[in-house]
Length: 126
Image 1 (cartoon, rainbow, N blue to C red):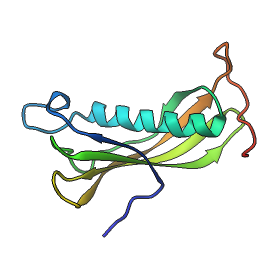
Image 2 (spheres, helix red, strand yellow):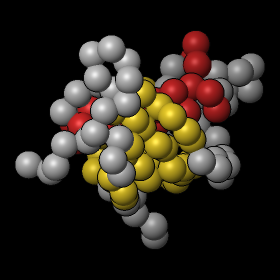
Image 3 (cartoon, rainbow, N blue to C red):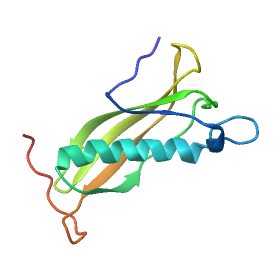
Image 4 (cartoon, helix red, strand yellow):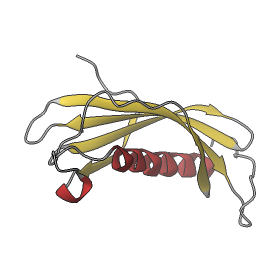
């Protein structure tokens, strides 16, 4: 059985307001949770403000259903001069179950910004 890669960065409950009429959670909502997770992780690494610069290929393997807990795992895979690339995986912990299914994954590229909104160097790791 496959296991998530990376650090658990965010857990949130999929609610009816996030779903279509069939009870499947909107892909855009899942992607937004992934973006939030990458923002958290990249801001910690950059020790400051970051923005999303790019999302590499993303395909959904399985739907998230109402009541599932969406678990987002992140891993910093590359640090450039001003950018941080993260591998992010979204997993659904099925409602009232221990079963975890991988929903999707992607590479997110985040850019560190200074107080004026311009790219700034990512500091060396502490």
